[in-house]
Length: 323
Image (spheres, rainbow, N blue to C red):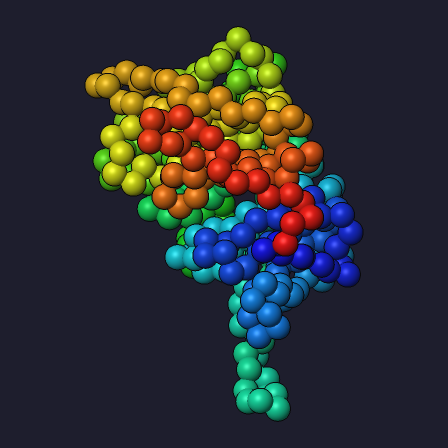
């Protein structure tokens, strides 16, 4: 079934993201942010606006985001209800939900909540194109990628007081490259922090050298000769596999790549090349890493799975008007 998100406080929705359990969603428009909650009392697929606010001015009238709010993302629920937003001026804001008061209603007492600004900081000099919170095992940590090709990592100084965020690492993707998309590798014990990046020319894998505290590129994903802008990346959960699966989209092409660690080397092998007839906007693995969903403006959503011979096929297609 399709879900309809509507809010009188939002104009054109630029970005939307579900929380960890898929029961809440954060959306942003030009200068506003809204939180949607699932409302099973209305109907099984009902979503209503829980809260919305102006993200470009606070109670004192001072500026928060000074330009279009272009990205939102949720932290893991281990840290409470925490949402980050990013804008084209390179500013990152962190918002938290807190209880304000208990109110009496006809059907009994109820608790009122509101979203408040916890921190606002200038993360970079150029537009933030994507951002993602790290797996919770790494702490409250957020990665941001920028139009100038830089990637920066910020840590919360105190998870109980989110007013302070420190830049802990940064690196440059490449000369004259933009960094469009970022995805963390799902946490595994005794494995270093790793991210999958999508740039203006290629997709690549970077890993943190804990001893030196520096990020280094460990793989450039094929086909390296395409020189096409990457529009989406996602890393699948391994779920007991001895190898890893990642996926990325470039123009109308979707590549599924297998990564296998062999001592100090990372073996890279393209296991599937899936085609759309219009540019792919986004892709994402399911929780088990067995099914890949891809979306494009002209074809809606396709679901891809391998057959018994390991050949990947579109198992289902969902049009934008399907319900």
